Every structure is written in structure tokens, then in C-alpha cells.
Length: 240
Image 1 (cartoon, rainbow, N blue to C red):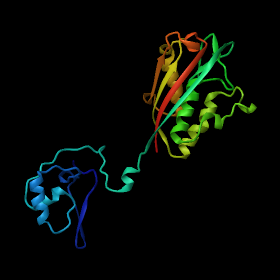
Image 2: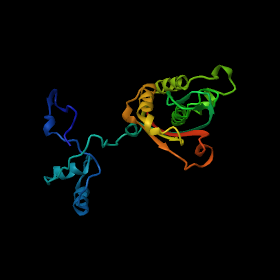
Image 3: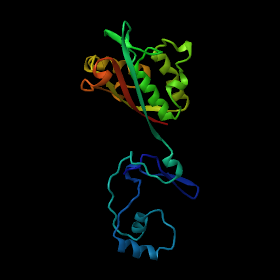
Image 4: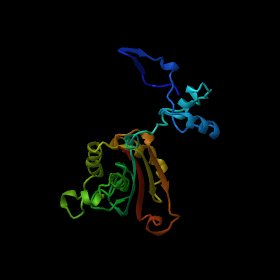
């Protein structure tokens, strides 16, 4: 592929510019007939950079196939240490109780019941927190916000998420995507999906296109099936 860098070469003390449109970055692997490559190699005394150099210096035709800039060439150790990606998983479940507000993804969702918990019981944000902490290898939500501490009683979940986002920034992580399964019979996720995603986008400081929210039921089985609980599971991908 054409080089994206400005290449220069030096002759004695004078510098010259190479025409970028006529300069090519060559990557490996490179494909040649084995016998041709073998016979040229055993005659080659000086060190060469790649197989293509061997053929070009022997006035043999080489066909170039256009590549992609995203297909990074790995030469040095640091080439594989950049943009490391980590994945974390989070899960939470809370009972539904009458007379409490229901919060999902930081959004107050109109419903006859809310989620019982030491905090506001927001299963989506709690699962996201655990997924992000897991991806960073920073233990879990209970370590940061133990439920035996009175100061965290009835705390809103966005306030719990904020220091986790700050922790990510401090450690130079960014979110690639968030995939959410909200598991409940009611309320219907499709009715509030866009609003919940918009709320999470603001809280996570990421574009809405990086968040996916799916509604799942349990076919009337167990506490969730009887509309007595709501659960959530989340997978987050982050990079450094």
C-alpha cells in the first residue's frame, strides 16, 4: 500500500523527498514460489530486509497487492503492546417492591414497583460498574460501595458510576462498547430502550452507537417470571 508517512533519503549530506504516491510500504507475509526463493536466497550474501527486496535486486517482477492501514505490521515488541483490549462481565438482580421508584440505566421508569437494595437498586448501572471493574481487574462494586456502610444507603447509582469512570480515565482506559441484557417480564424494554441508552450515553460519556440494550424474558419462570424481580447482565469491552 502507499505509505502514509513522508519518506526522505539521504545522499551524503543532502536530503531528498520521496514521492508518497509512488512509495510503498511492504508488509509480511509475502508469497513466492519456494524454489525461486530458495535459489536466490542461497546466493545472497548481504543481509536483506524482506523477500521482495531479494527479487527486486535480481530484476525480477514483484506484484503488489493493496493492503489496509488497519492491518498493522508487527516488528517490535511495542507493536503488540498498544491498544490492549480487555473484557469484563457484570450481573445484578434485585427484588421488586411496591412504593419505590424504579431506576434503570439512571432513568426513572414509570412502574408500580421499584428495586429493593441498599442503593436505588439500578441493576443496569450496577452491572455496568461490575463489568468495567472486571475489565480493569479492580475487584467489584461491593468493594467500592459495601452495603454495610450507612453513607451509601439509598445512594443513586449514577453517583456510584462516576468514580469508576474517573478510575478508567486515570488509568487511560476507554470504552469500546457496552452490551446489556435486561431480564424482566415487565416493564417492556422496547418502550424505554432509546431513553435508557441516551441516559447511559451521558453517564458513560460515550456515543449512543456504542451501547446496545436487549430485553429478555424468562418465560414466566421463577421470581423474574412472576414479576417479583429484575436482573441484568452486561459485557463491556475497554482498551488502553
